[in-house]
Each structure stands twice: as C-alpha cells, then as structure tokens.
Amino acid sequence: MRRLTVELANRGYDILIGRNLLSQPRLIADCLRTPRTALVSNTTVSALYRDTLESGLRSLGIEVTPVILPDGEAYKTWESLNQIFDALLAARCDRATTIIALGGGVVGDLAGFAAASYQRGVPFIQIPTTLLSQVDSSVGGKTGINHPRGKNMVGAFWQPKLVLADTDTLQSLPARELSAGMAEVIKYGLIRDLPFLEWLEANMDGLMARDGELLAQAVERSCANKAEVVAADELETAKEGGRALLNLGHTFGHAIEAGMGYGEWLHGEAVAAGTVMAAELSCRLGWIARGDVDRAVHLLRRAGLPVRGPGLGAARYLELMSHDKKVIAGSLRLVLLKGIGHAVTSAEAPAREIAAAIEACCDA
Image (cartoon, rainbow, N blue to C red; front, side, top):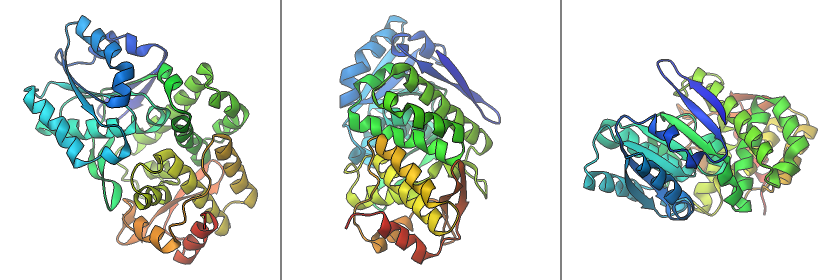
C-alpha cells in the first residue's frame, strides 16, 4: 500500500493507494469520530462493491446507512443532493456521522457537498472507484453539483478525512471510463511534470491493458502532483498559477459538457478535446511549437480519447465559457501552455484567436 499526505495549513489527510483496500475496513474505522456512517453510492458501483465494504464495517460494529443514487452525470443535481439529505434526516444522523462516498466523481462531489452542508459540516471519506476520481476529483476538497448554465457552479470546498483508492476497482471499469480517467493523468504531465509525461508515453500501452502495477504508479504520481498543488493553494485564490493550473482543457471541456447535455460526453472525454483546444491556442499565440500540439494529440489518441470537439460553433463555445468559474470581472482566464510541462493562467488571448482555435479543433 502506498501512502501520500495532503499537507494543509492546519490539518492534513492521507491518500491510501493499493489493492484489496475495500476489504480492510479498519483503515476506515480508524478515521471515524463515532461508529456511525452514511454510505453514498450509485446503482452501478453499489452492485459491485457495497456488500464488501458494508459487511466489513458492520463486522467492526459500525452502523451503516446506505444512500443509493442513480448513476450518471445527469443526476449531479439538487434533486440527488436532497435525496442524500432526506436519508440522513430519516436516519437521524448527527454531526458526528461520517459520510462515505463510494463511487466516481459524481458520487464524490455529491456526497462531499452533502457533508459540507449537512448540519453545517460533517466528516467525509472518499473511496473513489474510477481512474478519474482516484487521480483527480477525490483529492483536494472540491465538491458540488451542476447547473444548466454551467458545470460545478454550485458547491463548496470540503476536505475529506481520508482518500482510499483501491486500484482493484479499475479492473471492472468500462474501457470508455478508463480512457476518460487517463485524460486527467496526462494533464499532470502537460502542466507541470515532464518526466511523468515521458513515462506515460513509454507506458501507455501497458496502462490501457490495465497492468495493475503501472496503474498504481500512475495514480500515485498523479495524486502526488495534485497534493502539492492543493497544499500550496487550497481554495484556488492564487492570482497567478496555483490550483487553477489543474484546469487545463477544462474551460473548453465544461462548455462541451453543458452544450451537449450532461452525460453525453464523459468529463474526461470533454477535457481531452478541451486540452487539444488549449494546446492549439497556445500554439497560435506562439507559446509552443506545432510539434508540441501533435505530441499531446498523439498521447491522448493512444489513451482512446477524442481529440476533436463537437461542432457547437465558436460563438456557442464562447457563450458557455463565459460562465466559467475562472472568469473574473468579465475577463476569461484560460489555462494555457508555455511549454510541455509548463502551464500558465492567462487572460491575454484575443477572442478571435480563441474562436479560431475552437474551430480548428472541432468537427463540422
């Protein structure tokens, strides 16, 4: 088992990465304030892993209130959030009850937002079961729900007490979900870790073949990168760089998700196409070479990811991007590349260049 620590100003928490962790309930029990939990999952993940986790917790005398949600990005809504609150209130859960998220990014974001809000804050544990959630959404404390006008526009920062990433769960992922998670893995190499990008280029075939050791290494390196960024800028308040750099491709990608309807494109798929748009724009600004764009495109393709966005039209993209959380005083700040392994946040790109980059990277 690998152990990383997210070091925050007044507190920290561990990320545990390894095989067969769901069958070790003591890892969770040691983090509980009282022997009472609410287990939030979805219909798909619950059928695979709930019995193992729940029976293990109950064997230690821990009470479990299950909350099973529908599966999919389309359900990352107020209605699902209220379903969690209804279950917590019906079970008379108190402020010492720990909410456990068992699932991917949607479950983690919903359960985390519920934990941040219920009785003004209760303890929270993340057990991510997808590659995307293990390397990104489970770490760092961002929680929330979607709004028709924008992704993750309503939420809170609420750090977990523990992140437990059982890499055995990656063996059951559909191929499309594995690829979607790889978009976030590749992101770390592009924004700040060139040696990791080179490692990914050398090992992508093995990763896509689900080599367990390679996947564990990729998860650990990704989490280490995110932990460093989060520790330095927990609430994403840095004026330059900081945590915002983790959003390479996301402003474009969120526009794809909202424009196509949540769930039509997986988050990682939209981020991949958005990453190509960001690289294309960086090239048009003279910041990276055309060969750097081609390098990113090639690696994303090897991971089974789309490298062209849907043809929504540049005007529609720009309208959706205007709702992005990185817009400050009406100015759109994008994460772009000054080189492979070197990302920056910038509001310098002219609208005409952004539109041209979008059009160059979209299907007709």
